[in-house]
Length: 333
Ligand code: ADP
Ligand code: MG
Picture (cartoon, helix red, strand yellow):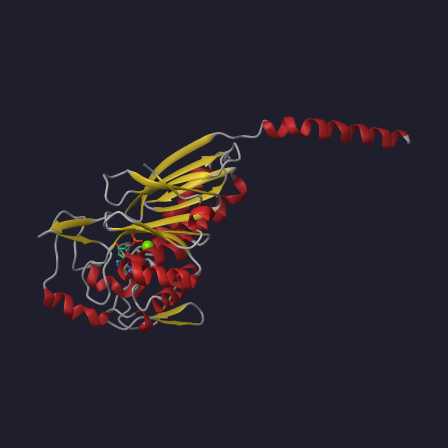
């Protein structure tokens, strides 16, 4: 061995020797933050994140809110809703969401419809007025709900017939979770992004174990869980009838509307949880399942090969084949 090689070999030995020490000194610090975007409390927990990443996540949230919110002047959705039937150019991101929304609308025979907006405008589930439309109001708007009339053309051009409006409340949070998860994936050891029921877990916990994500008890008090899944690098999305609702004459009116009636979906389901690498797909699917009810939802989910657990209004769990093992599903006592 020449002197130069000996030095190189010594250097390599030292490097290999110190490698475990260096990696064990890796930053595993946990940081967490809470924000309010998309009309929802957003909580973020990061493990081993570089300084400033949390701020970048909030900037991303604000960016997407300005693009996708129906109530932000000048957002893509606002411009589509005020286009009076004229074509509108939107961002590639908005276009991608609209494309997926239309596909899911078709797959679900319209149970998922972003053109639901003229009907959601007739209801107030959160503002304290508990407003519900009269039958005339409801029936008058029903013909405006039809996602197949939304035209998507080359160059991100979108045309919506005059009088119709869209609302991305059932899909946008999933898309944003996907984007932020992809953005931070290489910068953290692990992370939990929670957009009010749209959870994305990135990587693993610093000790190498999977994250345990609680499934909200749809029949219990706020914050209570009735089951958990143990997962890594995946999204867990729940839609439920407990989120925004009021009760009148013993009927629970909640914020997921049946596009065929314009009223709250009155099915046997209390919640639907989908586990998927695409939070956007899971978000739209979960909303659609509530509208479809357990029987149709299970056949739709198995057709799509989706992993899901449905909770009936009587508390029964129904899951897709192999869900327990795949997602480490455990009901809680
Ligand atoms: P959340 O946004 O509360 O997590 P969902 O993902 O189930 O719950 O979305 C519900 C929201 O989607 C409603 O607030 C409304 O904006 C919109 N929406 C309601 N009914 C439908 C429907 N049938 N298809 C698509 N979007 C819907
Ligand atoms: Mg949804």
